[in-house]
Length: 427
Image (cartoon, helix red, strand yellow):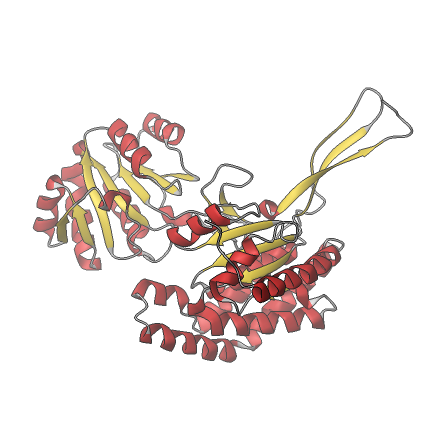
């Protein structure tokens, strides 16, 4: 069924995209020093306007509470002084990274003397459709600028006041640097029609990236006529192998689940080898009880939870596929690493999977057979993050297999062109 979009909304989005394409051509010519100076100016402008950003954010939080927004979404939405500064620091980190534009991916000289090279170039105009994460507004702007792209943002209504203020600040900073403000655009009107107009603006927009819940992502993937990089939900597992060090296992499980529950790289499922259960589960359940985690566990888990005072409810098939984004975790005892891998293959969203083991053969088996964007060995799932992996800010975590997979940073926002130089050769 074709969805009808209000013509005035289509006209507005298309005109925004045309202006963005003009700006993108200017950005593609910038030297790294010019882009880095602009990024630092954006960071300074955000820091200087911290009070204004927090005031706008408070407006969104009041609206969110009045609408009954879930606690985990309110956490994602909230900006305090430290978080605003962290957002600005992310721009400074991006400025410090190498510029991918102009990088030679590969090259050669043919037998007839043609010099061939494949070079990274900007995508052009990138559309970003996302939910209640105002830090994404700044991350997307910074990464787009550094990679020479213009960006059109369509944020969720929950963060409308915060996003609008952040974009106003950054557009003014761009102009102060002599750069086109239309390099950064925010669609504030038109509701869902604006998002649909953006993701069907083929020929004006080069790439659309959705970031948010499963419903938003699937809508963009299925309805977009513009190429899409799919970012996925995070049903992330931690598997504790038979040989796992007890203290390490406890620390990794707790960090993966509780360090921040409202993010896509938080663990949502725990699998424990039966031979390690008596050794590691009492300590894990004790820590779960202290942290307030509810264990959606199988019959084997119930006894461990009860002994340690952790909340327990029987696990269901639906639990195995749930991204809770809360202090809940599905948990099962498995008979072998092969059973753990089979369970993950059936229920994983392809985001991040982790194994805790002292057995190198088990680690190799896990990393070889588990199909996910990131596989952790003896490390928390929370490390699947552009900043943690040294990429600076990220625009999302791709769970697809084409072009980009895992944290998407600067290189993933470029494409390539072939440059062939000769001196008169003909075929």
